[in-house]
Image: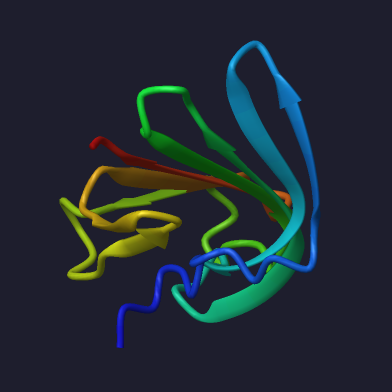
Length: 110
């Protein structure tokens, strides 16, 4: 299972076309909390550019790191792929702040 991120857009979302890109808001996503567990959020945005590239940005308040320090996850330290409309990618990173504010970004190029 490609966790990071059950991100393949669960498209019960609104779409708007602007600047030759499609923006899909309110997409569900899965991301890591501060201790490596997985949490689900519904405040993600998928942007698909006119060239077919996809970018998913997911923000959520998750359990903070027990260490009290920010943590960063990416393909470099987690053996997972991120799924975005258009496929799977290893081009992703997530930061969880000491207070539990998480931001996940996944990029897929066509």
